[in-house]
Image (cartoon, rainbow, N blue to C red):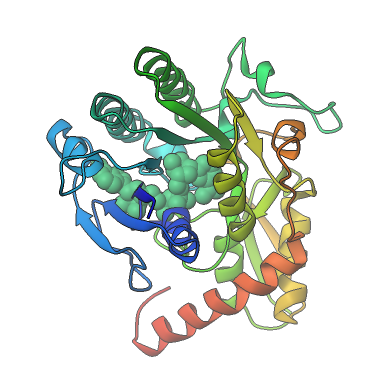
Length: 325
Ligand code: NAD
């Protein structure tokens, strides 16, 4: 039986990845500083560890018999949506960097065979709407829009350096925005799709929903089942170097809001307010991940149809408990 360690298994994508690995017959250890918030973990074993600490990383990658896990998936990060990325620059650079410094070192020294690192399209510079697709190589010369992207870029290079020195097969995905059920939907760390689902769930039919900026910023949103499929295909492949993973459907924030409103069956108008918007546009090549047979199966409408009902139910239950949402 193949063994896998998923770091960040208490979080959104890590939780879905654990489920996928279990469905493929893996023995899975989940590791995180916290347990999953919205459901029981599917992992065979769950270790609550702070991965900023070197000895915890050593413990995470070694199994009971002292042997290393076959595969390590590193998804632990101090992380959130645009509001968090702009207000918590120091925490992101400090905490996520420490996690990656120590995890990469511990995995390589323990003799882990395959190491997955979750990077982000935040490593790229800002783009103008309509600019041609950027390839992975065009992340350099680097000019990420935020410190989160700089941390990812450095951690990518560190993982590759350790891969070369220790013969560890390193696989790196640069995720586009990912969304789906069982992700953070309130509290300041949620990303745009979850925030808009929550706001629409709270709004009356015919009401208005606040969005940051003028709503013209362009992004693509990838449904979590597609993302996890990309992670698994990449890990099993021979693809060296970073690979973008994203749905090729690009939409503005206003179009995202309209899609959520349609799924909710509500007439909603946007009220634009000042707030952190991030880059103006995104457009990336998926040629590398397509070359190993991956293609997104969910367009935005279908993904929101899976996500909105879950968030609307969380909102309903929270209101029933008397919480402010
Ligand atoms: P998430 O916040 O839901 O999960 C990250 C997990 O890391 C959390 O459960 C958190 O508790 C854990 N963590 C934080 N500090 C830790 C520590 N010191 N020790 C152990 N665990 C710690 O985020 P996610 O959306 O599941 O993202 C997973 C990975 O994918 C991250 O590396 C993130 O940067 C990357 N990514 C996500 C997206 C997205 O849209 N969700 C986009 C690009 C990249």
